[in-house]
Image: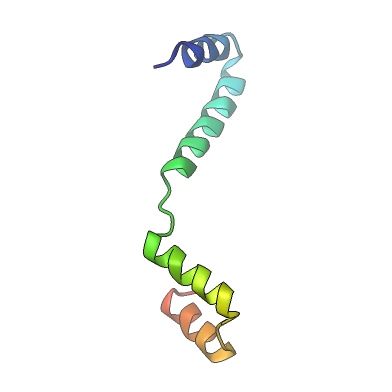
Length: 71
């Protein structure tokens, strides 16, 4: 753990329990966002190609995608 993070945690320990919990939730959310899966390099290439070609999904393709993912 870095020295700066150790100092931050020491400061958090001085807070009342409710505020410590709020800070903990924020930290957990932040760390989970860092490790959330992103697009693969291949998917990014597809997005860039679509944008360059100005190719977008049709209404039918969009609805099929929604059905596929239960949206």
